[in-house]
Image (cartoon, rainbow, N blue to C red; front, side, top):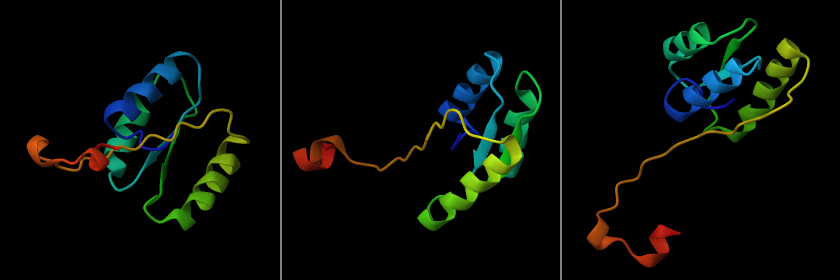
Length: 97
């Protein structure tokens, strides 16, 4: 699952592990956080995978490494968050879309 080293992604990974899933915890830059999430998951066989998904050409390599480690991917959760500051009184209608 992408973006599983913190926040919503870590919560989703935790829930799926509690339900018996074997989790591929993806991280972009914080390997320690990903390892902490991985270590906290119920069950066994979870692994971490680093990959800079800002570079779209790296995504196929991530998929290949996960399939090599697990044999297949049954569920993929593409979880990414971004924050862009927009002062409420200055945002146009188009910017909300």
